[in-house]
Amino acid sequence: MARAARRQYDGRRRIKFLLLLVILFASVGAPAWAADEPDLIFRRSTVFKLLTPNDKLATYGIDDPEVEGVACHFTVPERGGIKGALGVAEEVSDISLACSQIGPIHFKDRLGQGDDIFRKRRSFFFKKMQIVRGCDTKRNVLVYMVYSDRLIEGSPKNSTSSVPIMPWGPGDASVQKCGDFIQ
Image 1 (cartoon, rainbow, N blue to C red):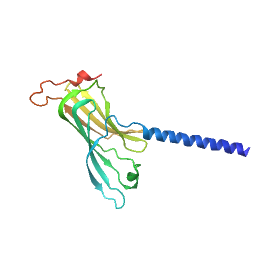
Image 2 (cartoon, one colour):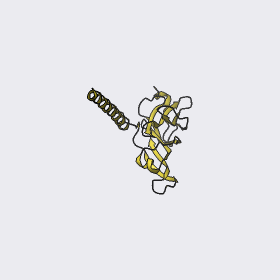
Image 3 (cartoon, rainbow, N blue to C red):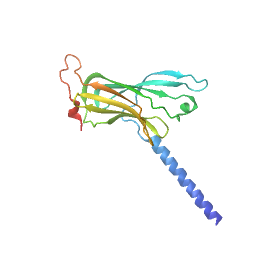
Image 4 (cartoon, rainbow, N blue to C red):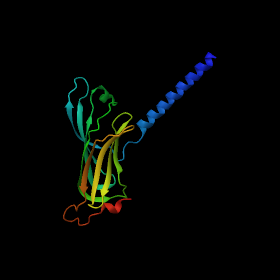
C-alpha cells in the first residue's frame, strides 16, 4: 500500500514539475515584440553599486512599423544589482515617451485604434511595457501612449506623445488623413 501511495505522490510531483516547465518556456519563449528590437541610444547610471551593475536609465529609439516617417524614443529605468544582472529584477513602471515626424508620413496598411507598436517584458513573469498607437481623426494627429501592466493588477503610470501629420518639405503637398486608415 505504501509503494502505491509513493508512486502516486511521485507521479503528481512530475506532473507539477512538467506543468511548471511548460509555463516557464511558454512565457519566456513567447514573442514579446510588436516591432523590431529597439535601438539603444544611450544609458546613464543613476545609482552606484560596488560589486554589481549600477541602476541605469536607458533611452531607446523605434520606428513605427505601420507608419513610415514616425519614430518614438522612450526612456526606461533598468535595475542593477544581483537581480538585475541575472535578469530577474522587476523593473519599475516609470517610462517616458516622445514621438516625432522624421519624414513624409505614409500608412503601410489599415490601423486599429490602440494597436501595439512595441511590447517588452519588464519582469520575469508578470509585468510588460507596451507602446500603443491611435488616431485623433478630428485633428489628424497620431497619438502614442506607453504604459506598463501586470498580470494581476495594472499600473496607472503612463506617458503620451502626439505626432501631427504635416507636409514634409516644400515639395510634399499631399498629407494623408489617419482617419482614412483606421479600421
